Amino acid sequence: MADTRPTPAPTVLLSQAEIEAVVADLARRIAPHVDDETVASVLLTGGLWFAADLTRALAREGRNVRFDALWLASYGDEQTSRGRIEVRAPYQRSLEGRKVLILDDVFDTGLSLAEAVRITREAGAAEVLTCVFARKPWPKPRAPEPDFVGWEAPNRFLVGYGLDHAGGLRGLPDICALD
Image (tube, rainbow, N blue to C red; front, side, top):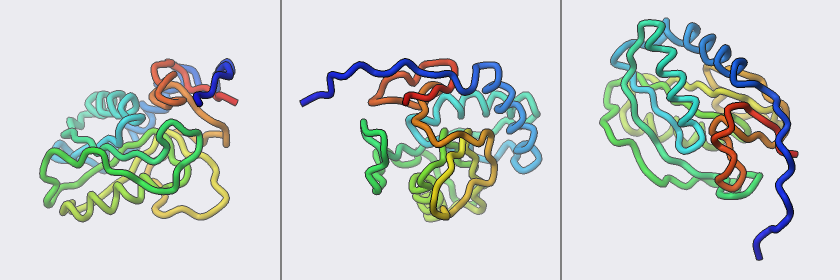
């Protein structure tokens, strides 16, 4: 039976303007490490908003990276990870011999990022860099830790800017807590 309780009102943690500043800062930090042959690979679906903003910010820094996507799922419609990763769609292009920058929205358990790095290396990438918009605290060590982190997020359930609650609230322009 579906949960019929009302969704709590989101509390803004990071405004749209603050998100833009974080993305611009990440682009400045990443630009010296990538070139126009680098493949920026977004982890779908939540990372799409961040990846679009970051690749445009990298272009403003003079880096016109290539683009691909890897669709992984670990949450479904739940608020906690199921503890396993499902590959819903693989890469579309060859990564053989290329530098790849994996982009994701939030780093919590580390399972999705670790699986993406494994898949990318198996696809023949020469170098793999990782970047997440937000990193949440976690009680256990995670491997691999991201190479680039935009924002140290609180340990709350986040929505907006691509982060969702059962598929909804992704389009909020701010990052909000839903708890």
